[in-house]
Image 1 (cartoon, rainbow, N blue to C red):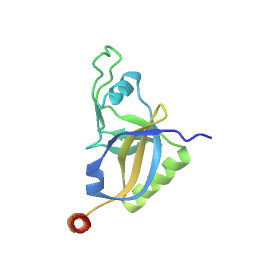
Image 2 (cartoon, helix red, strand yellow):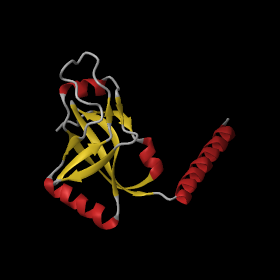
Image 3 (spheres, rainbow, N blue to C red):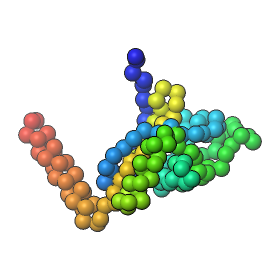
Image 4 (cartoon, rainbow, N blue to C red):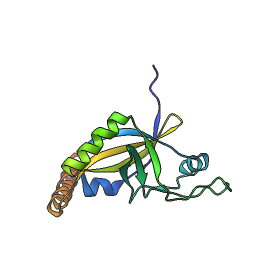
Length: 154
């Protein structure tokens, strides 16, 4: 079975800053043809996007897909809710975790898998201010170490 090629379209950098990612999973997304063409052109933004479960179905909300320039009556509103394609069992398990443990469902990245658009959704817990500072301090320390190693190897 050949491995399908994946091409990352966009990542949600804000999600990694604001949340600890506990678990991530792949979901399909229901899009129209002009939305896929706009995504191929790079007209998508995940910055303020989040996922919610309504009536046993999972939706991605606040994801902005720019209208396709050559599309006419087939263009959809840029901020509409888009259905995520998951098995019912997965949705029910996630709904239980979100309600009981106070976790959030956040889209982490959008990518092509073959010719299909997929979303990586993370089950996340929010970071407190001191956690964000700790993460920044670790990142700065690693940069300093890498810089020192690079200087030593010259």
